[in-house]
Amino acid sequence: MSPRRKAPEGGTGIVDRARATLFGVAVGDALGATTEFMTPAQIRNRFGVLREIVGGGWLKLSPGQVTDDTEMTLCVARGIVRSERWDLKPIADRFAKWLSGNPADVGATCRRGIEEYIEKGRLEAPPDEKGAGNGAAMRVAPVALYALGDEKLLSRLAVEQAHITHHNPLSDAACVSVGTMIQRGLLGAPPRELRAAAEELATRHPEFRFEGYDGESSAYVPDTLRTVLNAFFSTKSFEECLVKTVNRGGDADTAGAIAGAIAGARYGLSSIPRRWVNALDPGLREELASLAEHLVRLSPRFVENTGKEP
Image 1 (cartoon, rainbow, N blue to C red):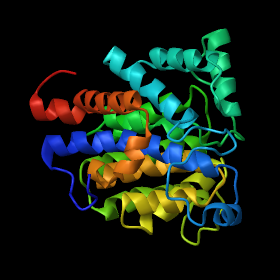
Image 2: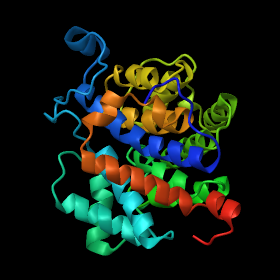
Image 3: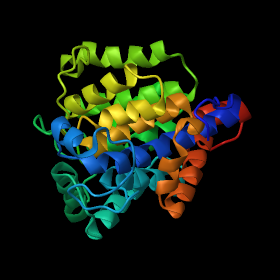
Image 4: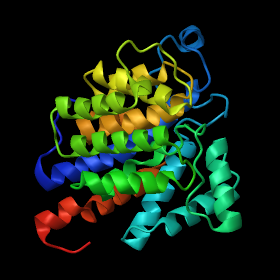
């Protein structure tokens, strides 16, 4: 898995990048969980520069163990793949089952939205002007894969999945922007087209401007995206993007998961350090690979190229 080998082109290349997208979520989550809630100074004092998946952190995780970022991403992916169509209920049902298992970590807004679904069957949380957290953007990658080839469809579905727990314009915009960058990376678009999506986001919502980034990496979704975008556009490889992201501390597991999804789509599976992939549970690796391929084969891009129905 040499970072020098480019992802293959065509349909095989898309599947490769799709797998890299979901693997990117998991390795970014596992790497960043170690530095979550730490300051950059604390990270430097303890690790110098964190480059390895070592576990620990405030959750006292085993090396390679993932958190809610990957777990909720899996819920979205499983819900789509098992249904083989877009339906929010199977996704919400999986969120409910996951929450009932007392996960190691769950954000307050996610918990509230899932509990509302369990109690009332509500698939759309009420609008919340203060609820601009990153818990919806962290799990949007499967939607980007499923809607590949149709950015308008992506925009609608990304917001629909977000509203199960997060109903806020900044969260909505972040989900669409992250999904768009993932899709453009999957299709092999040049970096300027990914940057155009980020700049469009910042134009519509100045809170997301990442030029002159101030280093704030909180769970407020503009902070998270500014951390990710600053790292992504100032580095030239998957590894350096993620290392730069998680060494900012703060909500490092979520920032790492989002950065991993975008960078995975951009650079491909061969770019992800083998030592990071090997740190993940083998069963998780197998499922991520299978889900990624299935999602893109359900997508408009695949249907257009093969003439097959999803």
